[in-house]
Image 1 (cartoon, rainbow, N blue to C red):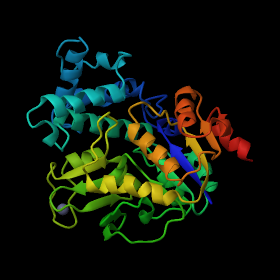
Image 2: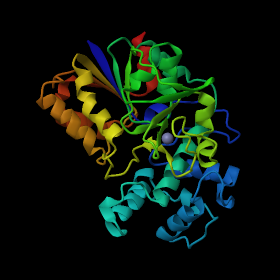
Image 3: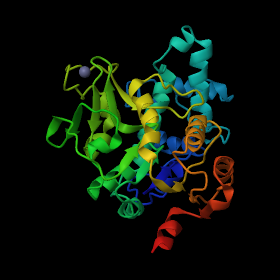
Length: 357
Ligand SMILES: [Zn+2]
C-alpha cells in the first residue's frame, strides 16, 4: 500500500526561499527558462567569460541569436526575453539537428557542444534559483511520505531528495540506480547499500549524478556544497574520479536526460531506471501529480503508464490528485489512461498540504 508521487518543474517552482543576489528568482519552468537564464547570465556575465563556467556558452548564444533573427552576437542576451523560446523547444532543436543533420547522425550518442552548454546553463539556473535554506514545503511533503511510497521525480534538482534525506526517509540506495562512490564531507566513499524508506526514481537524471566516461563508474555528490558548485567543479577540472583518477573535463559527465523529444535511452543505467520503475509500484493505491505538465514530448511516461495499466500493475480506477494551477493538459492525459471519474484537482502545493491536515 503506497502512494505514487509524480513531480514536475511546477513542484520545484514552489521554492520561495531563494537568497540569490538576483531579486525575485524562482526555479525555471519550460516557458520562462530563458528569461530566468538571462538574469543569471547578465548578473554573472557568463557571456563575457570565454573559458568561464559554461564551456561553449558564447557559441550557443550566437546560434540562438541567429536562429531567432537577432544577428550573430556572442554577447547580447536580448533574445532570451523572446517569448518564442522555451526550454523544450530550443533543447529539441539542437538535439534533433545533431541526430538528423550532423555527420554521424544517430551514432552520435554523446550530446554535442550546444546541447552540453544548454545542459550546463540549465544546471546553473537551477543552482542559482535554489540557493538558500531547505524548502519548507518539500519538507512538509516529505513528512507525509511513508514506507512503500514511490516518487517519480522528473526534476534534476535536489529539493525532494534533500527533504527526504533530512528526515532519514531516504538513503543513497533509494535512487535505485547503481552508484560506486559517494562524495560526502569526508571525501569519496564507496556507496553503501542501505534500505531506503521511500524510493525516488529520478527518471530524467539528477544534478548530483555523474558518470566517469573513462572507467564507467557512477558517482554521487551527496554534499550540498559540492552540488551547488558543480558547474565550476566539473568544468574547472577540480573533480577527480576516485577510481581511475581521471579529471578530464571530457571524461566526467552529468547523468541527465535532456528534455528533448528524442531522448537518449542508450545509457544502460538510465534505461535500467525506467525498466525498474513499474516493478517498484506493485502496491500503489493512489497517485499524486504535482506540478507536472505532461507535455506531448513526454511520450515515454505515457507508454510506461499505459503499459502498467495494461499489465494491471496499476489499477485504472486508482484515485488521482492533480496539483496544478493550470491542470487542463495533464488532466486530459491522465483521463486518457485512467478512469476520469476518480481524478481530483488541487490548485497548488500549499493548498494540497493544508487540506491534508
Ligand atoms: Zn573513472
